[in-house]
Image (cartoon, rainbow, N blue to C red):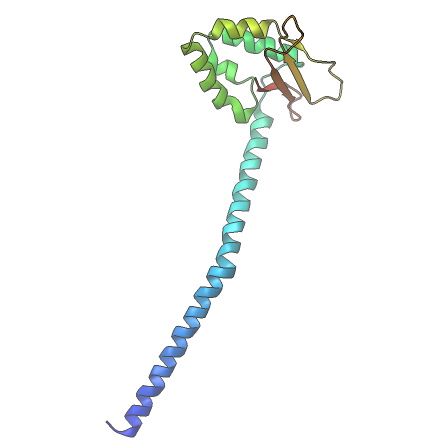
Amino acid sequence: MDKVGRKWRSGKLISLGSVIFVLIVVVVVLQTKLIPRLIQHYNEQKVLSQIENLKQAYRNDTLGGATPEETLKMFVTAFKAGDLELASKYFIPEKQSEYLAKMQNWVKLGKKEEILRSLENSKMFGQLKPDSFQADMGEVDKNNRAVSFVEFIKNKFTDKWNISGM
């Protein structure tokens, strides 16, 4: 091979090496800078979407009473009638499916009557102030200790009270 051919091939190898080096730099920059930012942006958008979906669920949630006591009474009526689907709708939207499963389990375990008795004996803990958005009810024993506990949250979109836990 002559000198011109060797120089030409050598120049080609240097060019190929430069391209590979640039590609490696681009990959490293993408992995360390751009890809984490894209993942973070995707996760942020996903969370924002979940929040908006939850807000919409609260806007659409029309079940519940004007007071925690009224909500509890509505819940007890549905639970007593065996309408667990309706009873679950008196919980805050993000806990409805969780409590539907719990109620199905309570019924299966034969705990329905025990739970109903406790709920029917529940009283407000403290006074409900007009601007309150949280309330607690429960049953107390003869020593004034809580034996059951029901937590409520007022839906700011509908002004209805929903059960947040028990």
